[in-house]
Amino acid sequence: MKILIKFLRILLRIHNNSKVENISYKPQMNKISLFGLAMAIGVTWFLVIIFVGEFAMLVLEKGYGGRWQENVINSVVLFRGIFGLAYPGWAMDSIGTFFAGLWGFVHGFIAGFFIAFFYNVFSKIFTKNIIAK
Image 1 (cartoon, helix red, strand yellow):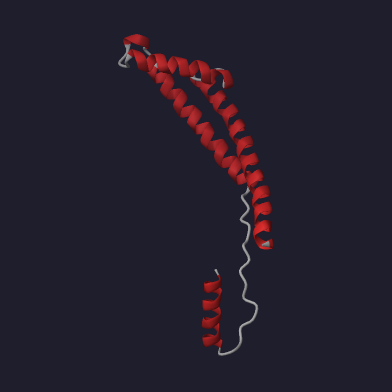
Image 2 (cartoon, rainbow, N blue to C red):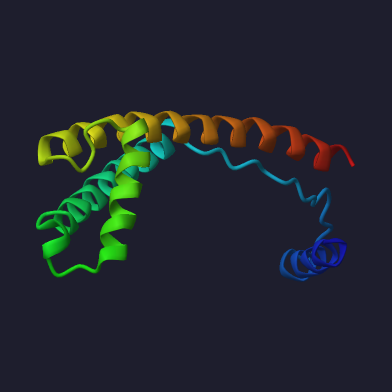
């Protein structure tokens, strides 16, 4: 970094043909929008829940008599049981999957908000430590 500052001073002296004073590097903190990241993660999680739920319903549509292998159907049934604990009604029908997606949006929104909040807090702390050194 010191080499870059010296190089910039030399370039500015040549360009301005005068003394250059007080060129310094100050790291800046980039803040993340709390609402922006919360919306992005919330909408992404909503879409994932909807699409995976529709796929699970497609796999389980004809049961063991359909085109899917038995181990795939068993895995989807197990996954639906576990995922249904957090999102009741998921992959049972389209309405239940939609409401589970809305509940997933709430979870994603809260998670995104806290991720951005803590990023901004820790970024401020660590940026102060860099400037102080």
